[in-house]
View 1 (spheres, rainbow, N blue to C red):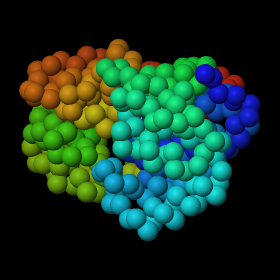
View 2 (cartoon, one colour):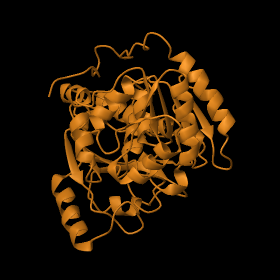
View 3 (cartoon, helix red, strand yellow):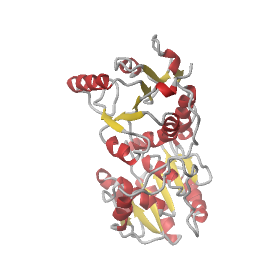
View 4 (cartoon, rainbow, N blue to C red):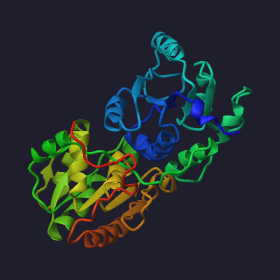
Length: 349
């Protein structure tokens, strides 16, 4: 059964996850916005995602901080805070809440207590017995995260608007990048990741970085401040000097840095999805064993190497050389695949 989209005035998107997860949901949200231009769309997520909503304000109208729930590892659970949050959600009287968190095993029952008119999303074994169950679909495995959520929108009667990623860059982002004063041409090396088990060894990143220097590029090492020990390890293992921007970039200036870079070499993290959005060539090292789920979709522009069981240094070196060759000369033009529709071009704040 398809939703009567014209009657939907207030929508909540539940996705309390990190940057890469939210980036991969944007193609689905794009379909939702085009299908429901009259609706107020609220992202219900982790505290950091307020800035994501501000950046993607053509798709989102509001943000609610989700305070956690038993079984979800992203943040500690406070029963008092959750009850206050639940009362707030109920008072907003959502017409539709869409579960884009995962397979629903933990959260589907919770969402049905928020008193929305409709609840939609994924289920693993069976949907909850409710009047809304037709708006749930079985969680599809073995496919890309982008396409998984696009399938959910199709299930709800919304047309696809492309599977490309986006990242809005503002004038403030350009200004903050200029303050970094990075000389081109350069390659970005991003060795950090959430969880050490998802990080390729720093000494191998150093070998790749030296290869890029010998190819005539400056090397810029990036990471958040808490990753200083990892980026220091890469620098100490290198034979050549590098520009260390650890802890010095904002999310927006990082996007400009990637947009202007010859190449990104990183673990499979949020920056790999920003590189996909800015059409910057990349070599992505997948350490979680799920490259089919998270790898950038453009296989020519982005090479993803599954390093979960072995380091595959020679394969990485070969891909880096190939991608540097691909990015030689004029930077690939960044175009809006849907010109005139929800434009993604740079806008002033």
